[in-house]
Amino acid sequence: MELILSFLALCVAMSALWLSSTISKRSEEEASAFLLRARKEIKTSLSTINHHLNEMESNINSLGGTVSDLNSRSSKNKGNVDTLRSDIEALRGDLSALDESIPKQYRKQPPRRASPHAHH
Image (tube, rainbow, N blue to C red):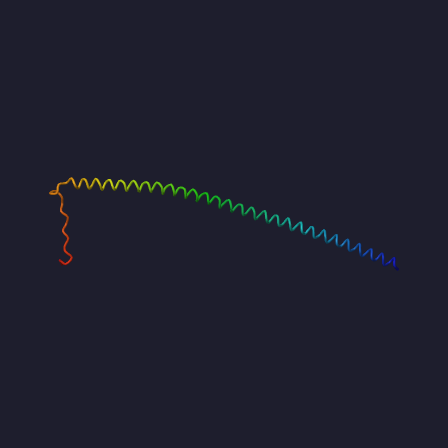
């Protein structure tokens, strides 16, 4: 009887080892498949992120060029405005000198202003 019980115990132990081995293999296969899928998803996500980063970098470079161009134009325009102001001041001086050179008898008299109390 003991021999039969020992044999049954040995069969149960072997079955348990076989089942645990089978479960271990399945879990390793599933884990491996999961890791492969996860790596594939991560690689796809990284590719998409890199693409977007490259687009953003291109847009930033383009904006940098535009800002640089605007700054350059602004500097030129400021120089042009300063030149125009200088020219206007010179013209005012010339006009003032010309006005002073005209004798008073040839100058047109400014129109007289009506008094604020007079009614027409």
